Structure formats: C-alpha cells, structure tokens
Length: 236
Image (tube, rainbow, N blue to C red; front, side, top):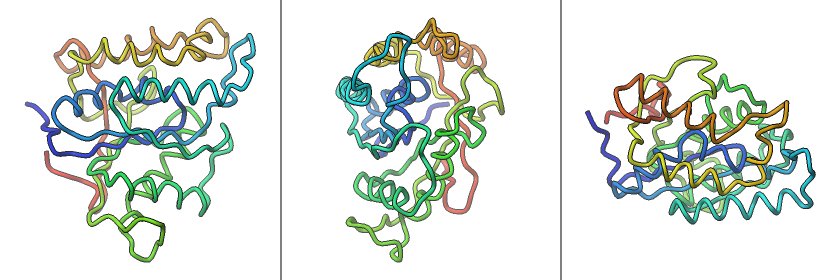
C-alpha cells in the first residue's frame, strides 16, 4: 500500500525550528520526491532553547539554521516570529497563520498532536486545527483570498512514543539519511544533547524512526494520526 503525494501541497506547521526535522521531515522529503510542493511554517523563534554555554542572539542563529534546513529540504519557509513559551491563541496569531495557509494553499496540513508534551506544541496544535477551518472562511479577512477547500490534517507523532499510537505510517526508509542531515543543520540544539533537562536529538530521532519502521514492516517510518473532523478528512 502506498500513498500518492503527487500534485499535493503539504504544509508542516511546527512550533520550533527543529520540530519538523524530528517529526515529519522524512515525509516532506518523500512528498517532494513524488512531485508535491512542500513548506514548513515555524511559529516560534527558538529564542529560549539555550545550551549550557549560552549562545548570543540565539533567535538569529536558529533562524539561520532553519533556513539552511529548508533549503536542503527544498521547502518554502514561513515564520510567525513568536517568542518561545509565549505562543497563545489570539486573533493576531490566527490571522498570521491563516495568511500563511492562504499564501501556500495546502491540500494537507501536518500539525502537532493535541496531547504533545510541550506547551508551545499544544497551543499550536489548537491553532492549526482552527486555521484548517478558518482559512476557507470568506468572513475571516486577510490579505490573500480564502482557500476553496479545507486541507486534510494529520497530527504528528509524539516523542518517545509517550501517548496515543499513530494510526498511519509513512515509509521514510529512503529519506532517513536526509532526515539526519536536516537535523544536523540545527547545531545549537544538538549541543544540548548532554543537558540534564534535554535529550540527544539525533539519537532520539533515529530511535523513533526505527521503531515506527519496525511496527510497520519497513526500515524507517514516521507516524501520524489523521484528524477525523468535518471536511478535514480525505480518502487516499
């Protein structure tokens, strides 16, 4: 069984500059290889994820890292420029994210799971669900015209498999090494691997991809949960 990403427009909406690389970059790369147009929207600046040896102007450093990763992936990059841990559902942020969706015009959204461990991830999960509906509303006015059809929405996997298990697996065996290289773009975060309150990201990513692959009969996979809501569910 294979998903066909050709002619799709896939937008990953993530909280921090390295979240897409951890959770869905393999799927984005596979979609691109199949002919899809792909993009990543990063909501937060990454300004508070400091390693033990503090980095000056961390938000600027992390912006350069995510630009490098997006270029390597071949993805259009959008940013909402919100401070870490200060991401809330406000009218202003809704308008920013709706405008991103209307500019890119996705057929498929990838968003953080509602039960994710991180407060920014959970806030953005709610916003992504809201925007998947509002982007089609002529009454919610932004610069760009409304979408004709609401995009499908898939929730991203949960790190260390702590929470509901995914319902859909995407084979990224051929994209795993690229996923590793994309994560390596985020050097400021890889430096935090030995921090007691963080994790070795490269090891965590490969463990997750390998486990999801074992569960689904391939070398490596990424897991998702389709959002089953009115007009946000699609046949594949």
